[in-house]
Length: 121
Image (cartoon, rainbow, N blue to C red; front, side, top):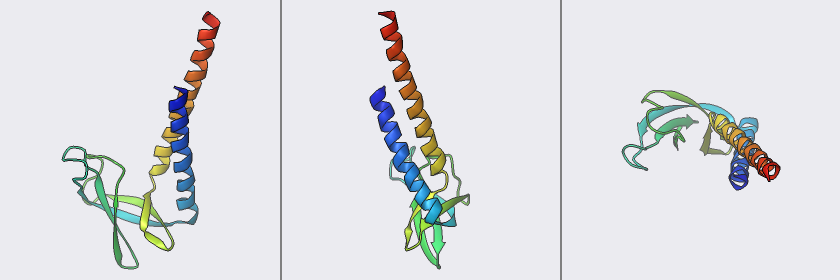
């Protein structure tokens, strides 16, 4: 459990630092959901978001699975100046905070269960 919590903390830390960078230095743009990709298969495909910067069209594969987006839905994105081809969905922040919370819960469970085992013996 401690190893899992360390992995969750690492995922949250790296994601939160990138979220901070995109939110601090990035430019907000609206992406429009177009279609589902077939990258993972017909049942677990991801959505494709399109956005434009200076009349240039870009595409981003959403981190959300099927059934979340419908064609025409909009999503807030951030891209870094000088790299409009690399964008990040605004909702990644909630995803990273979830990993932080799960990592904290797993760490607490790991520490608490170790104390219970030592207390019973």
